[in-house]
Image (tube, rainbow, N blue to C red):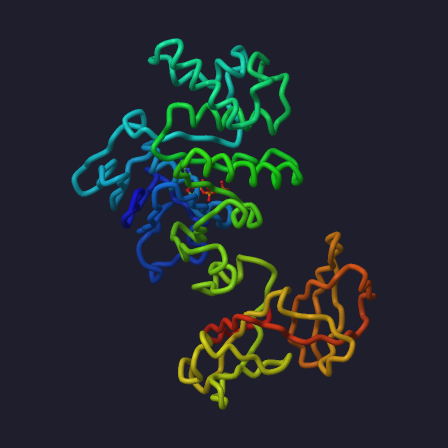
Length: 376
Ligand SMILES: Nc1ncnc2c1ncn2[C@@H]1O[C@H](COP(=O)(O)OP(=O)(O)OP(=O)(O)O)[C@@H](O)[C@H]1O
């Protein structure tokens, strides 16, 4: 693998990090670090994305790779070259790693033109080579017309593209991007995330991107990783992270979903999960009844899995609704008391308190061991 993180750990000197262990007690074991035994791989040219709640350690992982933090444990290599190894006490300095970084604040030099910003890391090159590379980067990010402008004469999105071009200009082996679009508005972010992916692919750049935004993660990443409390809970294709969450945390964190009580029984064509919204089948991947005591489990039901259907025998009462443009996100309560969520096209504008017909249309049945409270 091109980029390999092997069981890396990071502890900030003197940091108590109490919120990393909200229920900490002597029985909870040793103090957790900001990053704990985290492993991941990226192939050359792949784009990886890390997402997770605030404080879970995403930025810390990037800082370890960049060489801004020393590893407490584990090792990091690029193309087989060790950059850091806690056991050997090896730690290459950031400038020795040939890694580019793009941050949330574009950190452009205000007194330099766009072209000179992009050429900043190329001062060791001859003038013609440098100019050619700057022009190549300007074309890549679609800013050839703005070469002579100052950064303040550009929009936020354009400035971020200059920052990207500047980071790519020295042809880093790896590009790290830490929430580069977080100060931009939603429409622009969506546009830029597609553009970023195209630029990274066109230049064959291997990249690791950090974001809070799931839509952005899915739009950009070849591989998406979900972090929780310093650990990586899943590192997988975006489709799998959404449809085949490896842990309950990932299932809960990604998308709008609830866990509802279910019971797995053996049907003629494979396991069937009995739920308050009907029987679900996924012969290929559903857990067997024997996976849980008595077949009792919690079933993941995403808002996309619940279809509003007036003719459906199962009825649910609308508790809350949020208008999202193309659809409403309804929070529904069944007669049994179980809660569900549903994305319903916005022309189905029902009132809070109304009962509507629903049915489940689940392609991938995901089950977990039962927990005491399974409705939220
Ligand atoms: N320099 C530091 N010294 C001590 N603790 C730190 C330092 N930097 C980060 N931390 C702690 O390490 C943990 C992980 O922080 P990090 O910034 O990596 O998380 P994050 O997932 O990137 O969060 P966010 O999404 O809010 O940026 C947090 O508990 C944070 O408070």
